[in-house]
Image 1 (tube, rainbow, N blue to C red):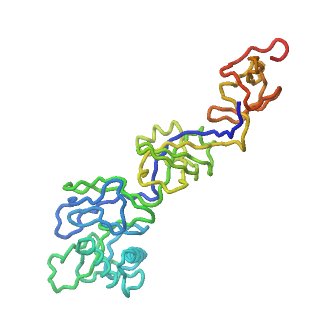
Image 2: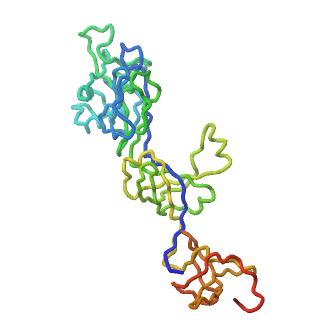
Image 3: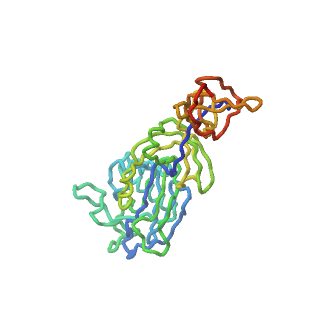
Length: 368
């Protein structure tokens, strides 16, 4: 018997994931003379850290470039283009040392064109161009016609003296948000026709998404401490429960199995940034679900027995080997111990108790 701070814990599973997950897609052909979208280079592998300005892969000789930003690329940007995506591009290029010159913020003018051209040259490529200044269906300058792709050089049928403008194709740009950017998986294979998804990258701080069964949910609350153990790397970390809520609805063949048992999602925020090696790993989560306010008197769970008359007792071994049954009231339990408070008699730290006493018959006379 001893006094100790008692904690109750539960163990579940989780996975380490970043705050942003991006599938890098192949838009097919981006060069006017290209006939097949073949993967010509893969510049990264799973686990790599990606810096803004890096080349992720090549499709038919054209690069897929990473830039800093939170707004996904959704259109080709060229002369006269105006919008928040242009602002994002100008800021991303400025971070790499390529300024927009005298262009207003959010306007794709000559200064922004020069910045894009310099950026491509530094990466080892020629910036795509398009002939002249085009208008979209609303008459605004700078947009490509629907379905038309910019060329990677002088457009077919255009003479050398025809004015051209630099264009940044959406198919050659991936914008990623703040935080470390890592490669989670790579599907692209050099020499193969580019599939829809080339790779998956993640960005932002690493966190942990865990799963709770319905019977565990009520024991877990924000603020509780969590021990994190990474299976593959054997790494350890400490985190804090951030939130508990319904798990995302499963889809496909997983949906039928999930109907039988409701699960809940628990989000864990690491107390310190997780090492990059944790990314994508399955982890074991030990959640400290409860803790006594201070040191309490405890005995091993096996020392507690239930009597036929409803009393809960422990058997204390006195000096000389004499055994006394002491009625107790139990409190919280955890880690193989249970909190005890004597109802009759006395208990003290250091007392020896009998383990595995089991249920005793009801006393026929006085107290045992």
